[in-house]
Length: 182
Image (cartoon, rainbow, N blue to C red; front, side):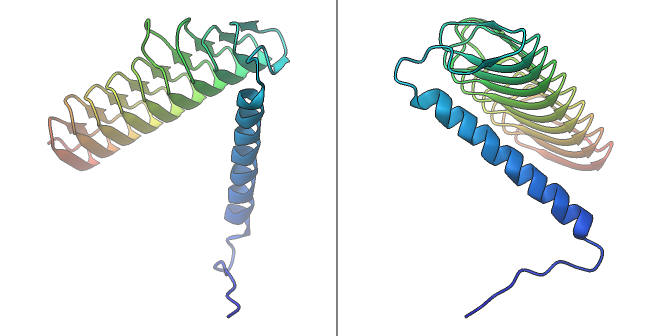
């Protein structure tokens, strides 16, 4: 059984962007694998003018990676001391607060992680709630296990979901649309 994946007419540009994204993700995971495969966990990768902790790696310029077993790629990213297994890719991303932000990922520009197990993809996002996810632009996740997807969305309490533009979600509620509130 021979199946082919076909794309609609005129979708060549989308396919090229997806191909670049997949290649960049493969490169990122290869770098992380190389970092963790080193038996002594010493500055495994170092490129550019960066400040590193004992077991961290940085590629780019102006990164301060003071965390343990952490990786920064880009410029002016900051991982605070005592944070573990944090990856920051892009420009001016921050993982802060003592013993918070561990096991987190920020991909984009000017994002801030303030708690453990946080995930940010986009620009100008803030995640303060554990297991929080922010995808898009200008989102703020304050509740635990909450998601903000879109632009300028906010989740205030745990288990909230806000999707769209300017949406706000309270505890265990979902706001979807433009300037919706739940």
